[in-house]
Every structure is written in structure tokens, then in C-alpha cells.
Picture 1 (spheres, one colour):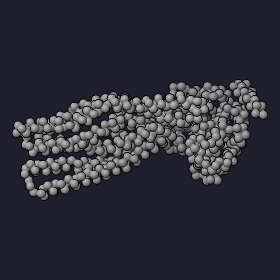
Picture 2 (picture 1 turned 45 degrees about the vertical axis):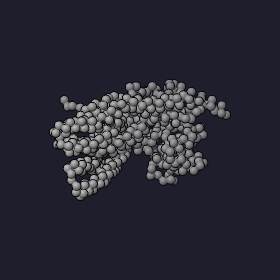
Picture 3 (picture 1 turned 90 degrees about the vertical axis):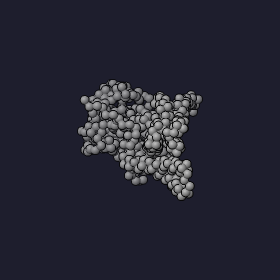
Picture 4 (picture 1 turned 120 degrees about the vertical axis):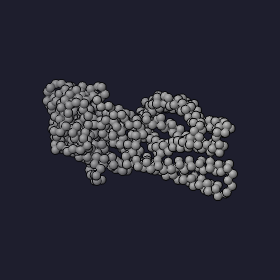
Length: 586
């Protein structure tokens, strides 16, 4: 039996993501090593100068040459460090940009339910802050930590060549310092996991608080909503404070003890010199070299926080970048026809099945309506047809081809989807409509607006088609946002149009305008409409009544009325409510 493939480490995964930029990291490490060598060499030069003084050398050229060498080494250290840092940062920001783009592209290929299961604040936290946090690992730890590890190794090896006893003496503080370091690392995974969850919760609450500020103010929930935000903010702060409090003492001892090589070298070396088994010049030489151990050890240890959190940070990013995608091929041919067929389609939200074997026929060019009580599964069916989700079992065919065998981009080109809460980006009205077909001219954009009944109100805006709609279209009313969304879908000119409660925010007058526009613009296309206002779908070629995730009934309006079932009950209730509204407004 083959063993399960082990997941790569955080560093290995990041370097794998680096792709063509790996050469730049190799160059950065090489430059960092040269810089470190330039920082090590001065200790040897200074030791040579001291030894020369102790040996009684008086020629000035001997010392001037070494001082000049020290100046060159200092310049070399600065130059190599700058080149290494610039190279690693140039590669790192390119890699982070590519990882962020892969994460965003992944969201488009994931089932919509998996995306919506995460709050927008949590996704933003991962795709922005978490990916930004990788910068230290790639830009600093890879070149600088790697190179600075060479310094203690080189120094200690050289001390061993002078006197093995002093080599051992230089290592005496390492086990105790490592013990403190391990104590600091103990439990750090749990502490960091808490900070990640607390930060995500704070981001989610902040986004919710800002987006819902109008409701909060209208219903007087300012205090309770702020208290929740404050509680999450306090928990986020406490998670970091508790983590730092638990590690500050062992970290301080580790930082103090690990580089304190003089604590062992001075007394042991002094005893050896006094006993005559170690030359005084060699002792001074070793002291100077030992001083060179301090800075690189402190530099390496300064990255301890980044090293211990690296796994969690990368894990958060990988969870999105490597999330399961919808089961669709990358290439394939488009179906020649646009007829749709659902065969025993089942779908679940988590462990709860909401569609229990849906069977439907939607001929090409037909007008099909889905009606039923709220929560019956109508919108879920529409989203499955639009390839926003994947059916658990059964199959959906387009032109006789299973959707699972059709690339997502082809499915997207075939379907224009308009829901009751379509999103508008913080761009101009014109650009929001043009999203339906980026190559459309201004005249085509305005024609789509006319046909969907929103040209007049757009012209009445402050800057007409160049008016910024605000975040999520906040500068427009619900009905105005809806009509712009319909214009966008109409401009797309897709052969299949799905309207999911598309007239939910429109008044009766504008609803009639939109209905006439939809009738003209969807002529010859496959139209699927989900509506609570049953009067708007009376002319449908076929109406499917959905109840509790099943097809309860199907037929034309007249046929369903004659069946005296759920449809008739809903239709008569709708007409009675509409008549009452007319009498009240009249």
C-alpha cells in the first residue's frame, strides 16, 4: 500500500509558489552570504591587528593595510546587504501578488456555497493581511536568516582549529539558551491560532458594523452593536497580550543567554592561559572572534516570532489557494444548443439536503418560471443551472452535454444571471453596465439602459452615466440598482437569461416597463424566471411549482389553476393582496 504523500513545509510551499522567481532568491541568498562574509572578516582582521601589537610589530604599513581592508569590508557588507534585500523584495512582492491573484481566481472556481461560508471580513483578512505577513518570510528569513546562520558556524569551526577546548567553551551557553527558546515555543501554536481567530472575528464584525450602520442607527442598536464590536476588539487585543505575556520571560532569557559566549570563554580561557596550555595571543584572538558571534545570533533569534507563526500563516493562505474547485474541465467545446435538463438533481447545504431529486425540462427559447414558498429551493436550482454551485448527485445538461464536462467560462458566457441583490461596484453607472460586455461601445451601453427602462433616471443623476454609484451601489435606491443590473445582463446578450426575483425592488409602474423590456430582449432566448409575484409569469410556457426541495407540480398557468393545488392557492392569495394594495393606494 502506498503511503500518503506528506504536505510540503511552509518554506517549501512558498518556494514552490515562487516559480520563475526562485533564481532571484538564490541570488539574494548568495549576495547575503557575501555580505555576511564581509561582516565576519573584520573580526579576523582586528584579531590580526591585536596579535601584531602583542607580538611587537611596529611597521605602520602592516596596520594601515588592515585598516583599509576593514573599510572595504564595511562597504562590501553594506553593498551586498542592500543588493540582497532589493533582490529578495523584488521577487517577494511579485510572488505575493501572484499568490493573491491565485487566491482571488480560486474564489471564482469554488462552489458559491463554500465562498459564502466565509465572512467577507475573514476572506479579506486572509487575502490581504495573511499574504502580506508572508513578506517577512520570503524577503528576510530566506536570505538573512540563512546567511546569518553561517556566521556562528564559521566562527566556532575556526575557534575549534585554534583550541578544541575553547571551541567547546564557546558552545556552553547554547544548550541553556536553546532550552529557553524551546520553552518560548511551547504552546505558541495554540496562542497564535487564537490570535488568528480573534483577528478574523474582529474583521468580520467591523465589516458588518460598517455595512449595517444605517440599520443600527434606525433601530437604536448602536450600544449593543458597538458592545459586540468592542468585545471582539478586546478579545483580539487580549489574544496578543496573553501570547506575549507567556513568551516574554523565556524569550528574554534566550536572547540574553544564547549570545553570552563570554560568560564561559573568559573564565575557561583565563584558566588555560594561567596554566600555560593556551597562548595569550590565541586567547585574545578567540575573545575577538567570540564577539562576532553575538550579532548574528541575535539577528537569527529576532526572527523567532516569524518562524513560529509561519506554518499557521501559510496554512491560512493554502486553505484558499488549494481549496477544492468545481469539477469542470479547463478546455472543451461549447454545446450547439441551449436546452436545459435536470435529472434527479440533489443538493445539500452542509449536511442538510435541500433538493431531493429535481427533474425538469427547459427547452431552448422557452419561458420557464419557478414558483413556490420562500426557502423551497427555487434560487438554489437557478444557481445550479448558472454553475454557481455543483449538484451533489444527478446531472444538469446544457444542449445535451453534462455541465460537469463544460468549462466554467463557457457556462458563464451562456448565462446572464440577475438576482434581487445584484452587486454594483464603486464605479460609474456606465462601467457597471459595461461589465456585461467589456467591449461594448457607449452607444450600446446606453441602448441597453433604454431597453431595460433606466435611461431616464440615469440622465437625472448628477453626472448621468458618469455618476459613481458608491460602495455596493449605496448612492442608488434598490430599484435603481436592480434596473442597472438588468441592463448589465441585457448587454451581455447571453442565450440563457435567469431572473431571480429581478423585480423585487421595483414599483408597479417600473415593473411593467421592465417586464416589457425583458419580453423584447429575451425573444428567442431561454428565459428562466423566479418570482413571488405570480401575475408576472402567467404567460410562461411552463411553470414549475417547487415545494420543500421537490417539484410539486408543473404546467401552464391554466393547467395549474385547474389542478387546484398549491399554485392556485398562492395565485389567489397574490391577487387578493394586490387588489388590497390597489384599493389602499387608490
